[in-house]
Length: 204
Image (cartoon, rainbow, N blue to C red):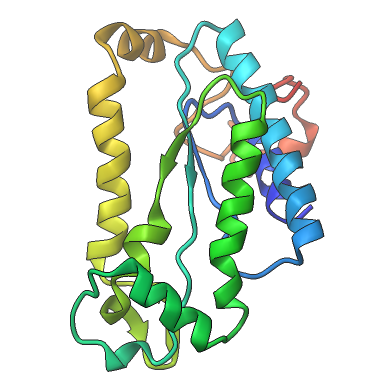
């Protein structure tokens, strides 16, 4: 349920060779959050097994979640002090944003205790909480729509790929043949592909 539904659908409909996963900033009670994280990581584990069986290098990234910032437009520059910003968020509770820090910790603990073959962290929490001036507007102090923050997340991921992917890895991915046309969701008949009728076992 929750986040895991989207993962399950993706794994049934396609076979991704890299996954970046995040639960989003919409609060879930801790018990539900625990269950959803565990279910999601179980699905990721099945995906990693499929990658290993196909001799494919498939990196998995977990992206932590930054909180919204109360009265974000009162900030005009970065705040290079994560402790100060955490205290500010905690003292201005709104939409359960003050609980995101704890739920990030839950997710990281679950990752550490999981049986995943490997994983990597994109720490969006540390980046995003220190850039309140880049929130969308005074009416939307949750989302970052300026390019700086999102670009930083992408840079972290691309740095990992550049540092860790070998020419052999790239060759394996380039040579892999999918049992479907990855460039379109349109079937030869001209209609949208009905993935619910697909029997290819992408998810074990």
